Amino acid sequence: QDSDTADEAVRGTCDDASVCKRFAVSVGYWKDPYIQYFARQAKERKAPEINRGYYARVQGVNHLLNAFLKKTECKCQIISLGAGLDTTFWRLKDESILPQKYFEVDFPSIVARKLYNIKSKPPLSKPIMEAHSGESLLLDSHSLDSTHYSIIGADLRNLKDMEEKLKKFGMDPQLPTLLVAECVLVYMTPEQSGSLLKWAAGTFPTAMFINYEQVNMADRFGQIMVENLQRRQCNLAGVEACQSLQSQMERLRSNGWEAADAWDMIKVYDNLPRADVVRIEKLEFLDEKELLEQLLLHYCISWATRDSLNLGAAASSY
Ligand code: SAM
Image (cartoon, rainbow, N blue to C red):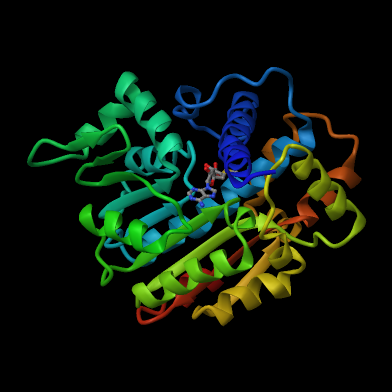
């Protein structure tokens, strides 16, 4: 398998994520009026376990992200690494909690697709224009730069090029910075994800990194997950770092991050607001409790800070 094929398969994963999110939204797990403009409707129903898993993923990441915005009073920037067709920018705009700037980075071909949707669908372009002030905004087929939202086509394995592009669009290393990687690092070798983490730690003195990905991959269930992804030719170069919560934290710490923590999704699920969990558990009948637990056990959120603003407090208040 050549590396282009592997990269192409990795790029395809953004559709999976968004189609699953759109399906869960259509059942009522959470609200996202924008996902329909990026993702097609699922061809068939997704299993209730999958929907609950996505619910925990989205709510868990949102929870940390919102805490960061609160702590910094939105005087910060967010960089979504491997953003795919994610809709967080539009949610933050609707909730009036936009950071000074929201950056998205993904492969140029994914960015081109996202931009095509943004340009052709007013519900997506309007919020960007509303948040934009001043000169006309900068737009070509592989990038867009506006006052509060920028999207950049770059390879996360080519840090120099990515940094240059981010700087060109006004990335400010001195601003408190939140970096988010949701299901992204697993597709990079440990050296590549290590370099990315180290670059981020070395670039932003006040920062937080949130990572969502697989964990506990060495056991039988984990092996089946790996085989399923490999069957789709996905290059899982990073699965090594996904052995345990310990190895997730260790990777953050050894690349310059402090106060690292990692929770499997069972723990995240158990800590979501009770009333909301009660609500979503009524949405669909689930008879395979064990399968849900296995799924949740094999994903985690890990996070760490670089602290001069006492951001740790925001993180540990999970
Ligand atoms: N973060 C989004 C979400 O959770 O909905 C998308 C997740 S998708 C599973 C992984 C994304 O990471 C894809 O959009 C893929 O193109 C991107 N990606 C993976 N490796 C990358 C790299 N080396 N450079 C840029 N983007 C990358």
